Length: 443
Image (cartoon, rainbow, N blue to C red; front, side, top):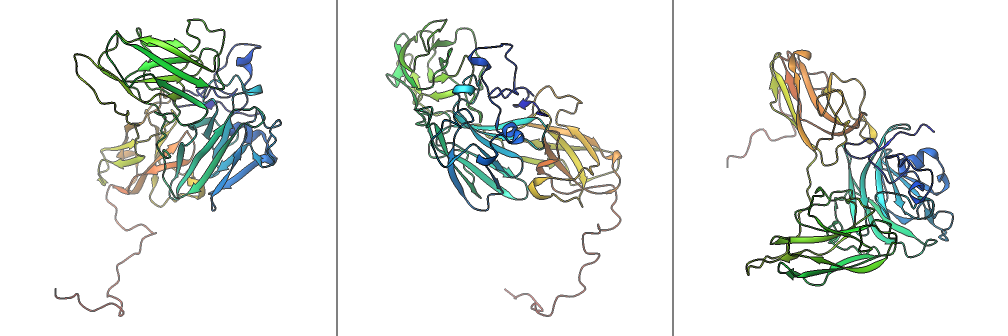
C-alpha cells in the first residue's frame, strides 16, 4: 500500500492509534482491531466521497465527523470522515469501537496528523477532546484552528464529533478545557473532598461509557498533560493507583464506579486524579486539583500550567567572518526526531503550503547526527562559516526530513559582501520625490 510508519515525537512507530504504529504481536482479539490514522486513510482513498479538502480554509467550516469504525452504521446524512488542511494536515475522529476497538491511543478524540507526501511517515500533532482546539501555524501564511465543539459516544450508530475549522485565530484551548479538567465528553472523575489530611481515605468516582480493559486511576502531583493528552511524568514505585475494576487483574470493564485510596503515604501538596486508558499514560479525564494538608497547614489548589514553547529560530550574530562557527538556536513546541536545520541563500523563497526548494547550502538534523535518538524541543545547531561562500543567508527549521518550513531566522552575512544582492535596488534614490515635503517640521 506504500504506507509509511505512524509516528509520534521520538518514535517512528509511536502513534498507536492505528495499525501503522507499534505492532501488537497478536493474531486475534480486540487489540488487533485497529484502523488507519487520518493521513493513511486519505492516502488509501477509502472514504473519498466523505472527505473534504479545506485547503487554506478561505471560509470557516463547521460539520460532523464520524469514525471509520462506525461510518457504515451512522445514520447521519451529512457525515464526513476525513478533513485535509493546507496540503499536509489530516483530521479524523478516532472512535475506538467496532473494527477500531483495539486503538491504543487517542481514544474517542479528534486527531490532527501531519504527513507531507504519500509513503512518508505521519506525525501526530494533537489529540483533542470536546472543547479543545489545536492551532496549525503555517509559515508565511497564518494560523488555522481546529476546534472540537462536541463529542458524543453514547450510541455506536450515532457516535460523532462536531468540529469547527477557521482561519486567523490562535486558540490552543477553548473555554476552560485544556486537558486538566473534565470536558463534558461523556466521562467524568471527581474526589469526594477537595482537601485531605494524611491517613484520610480518598474516594474517587468515575464514569466512562467506552471503557477498556486495564483502564486505571492514578493520583499524582507535579504532572503536566501534553498536546497528545499524555501525562509527562514517569510511573514510579509507590505510586498511588488502581485499575478501574479495583484489582490488579481486571477481567471486567466497568463504565462507572468508586475507588478508595489510602492517603497516608502522600506528602502535603496538590494532587490530581487521572483516568488513564489501557495501562498507559493517555488521559481520558482528570479531576479538579485537591490538597493533602500536613501539620495543620493548608495549601490552595492550583492548576498545573500547560507547557508551551514558542516556535522560533535565531542566529548568534548577524554577521560572520569566513572562518567561525554559526550557532543557530531554535525552539519547537511539536518536534519530530527528523526535524532539521538548513541554511539557504537569502534569495530563496517559500512557496505555497510553506514548502521550500531543495537548493540548500548546509544542513544538519537537530541532534547534529545521522540518526537522532529523540526529538528536540529546543537546541543549538552549529555550522562552520568556512563551508559557505561570502553572501547573505537565512537558516530554516524544516519538518520531519521534508521541505516543509516551520520557521526561519533573520538574514545574516558571511564574509565580505562586495555588493548588494540582485533582489535589492542597486543604489538609493539620489533625491526625494517631489511629492514629499522638502524639509521636516522644525518642532
